[in-house]
Length: 111
Image (tube, rainbow, N blue to C red):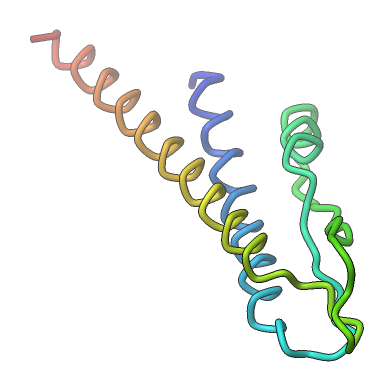
């Protein structure tokens, strides 16, 4: 229908996937030798726009020093990433809702 709606859908898909990865990191905060994971949002969005194929490349999250047990999860960083991703997702939802409402109004003949 509209390229902007497709873009917003892809942003929401990537955000939802990233939320799962970040939640997994938080769940494994006390797991010895667990390496925090993430995705490169910009690279994933570019890849999603260039093709309709859905496949995410999970990377080891850049971090500060590992804990004594080898775990690289920093709960403050993970919570910040989680909040950032949540805000981006909600923004995409609001923009998509606005776009749909505009299309409905246009179909009904405007107001």
